[in-house]
View 1 (cartoon, rainbow, N blue to C red):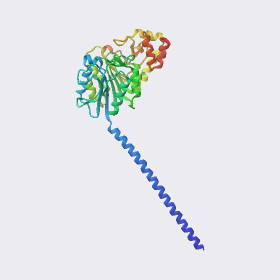
View 2: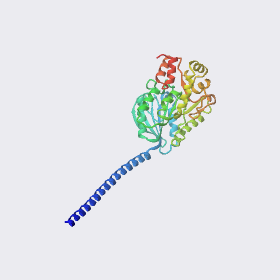
View 3: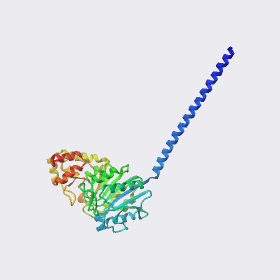
View 4: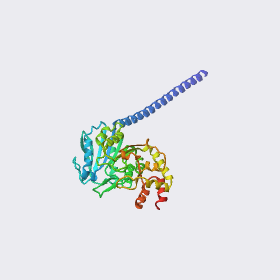
Length: 386
């Protein structure tokens, strides 16, 4: 009987040991299986991500080319397209443009009756698609171009250039002569960029146009771009050198090339200026401007009256550095603004601001649209009752 019990206990013990081994084996198999699945999914994710990165080109330049009277009268847009066609564009670089806004195009077979999208490829202008004519002064036209360009030509870095007339913060850019000279206002291109599907910041946003290197526009553009390139004053109809710009794309020297080539092309002229503003450092400019405002109405007005306004067609645009100097405010924009200019414009700091004191309607519009709350409060308190 005793031996029978011993055999029972021995058999039961062996059963328990075998059962434990089976259970451990099952757990071990399950853990290995789960680990395999997790590793597989992670590898698949990394592979897909890497492929996406590898498939993206190095650089895409989008040009929103509203020909306007500059093209219909002078053929200036066509001339800049010719410069693009003569460029040796690097591999993995895209140059794409949308044309419109002009009653007549002088070269390259561009239609004035449609919006057309082109890619510069092998020194030729390749028509990619056409769309029904619409105003280039409309935010939806710009948004659709940005969405199309960034989706069709994804790149590690993307830049956007506005080509046409510029009228400063109160008017805007891209004056479409087909649609009753409608301007694309700063507020409208703000809407276009805000509602665009492009999820990244542009490397730079450039304005090959007059009067757009202003503080108010920079505040808006800083939400969407690392740099802004524009002129405080009037630009000549020749504009920028697109051959050299296209050659430099993807090199990391694009902004330097734009400034250097602009300076070289205008070296014989008495009046020219172009600025590259590092928008990640714009707070430095804002602090200087706040110091100017804090001096109070009387001192501010005295400085304004002593300063020269900028622009042939405007009397309310002033250089911010000049204002600060007249108010004895120390400032240094060298780390955030790079300027090239003629000798007669060496006194310009590279960024302007608007003070529309003499025009109540313009003042009201400015207060509604400027995004510097401290400045608009200053204007409301002293110059306008709203």
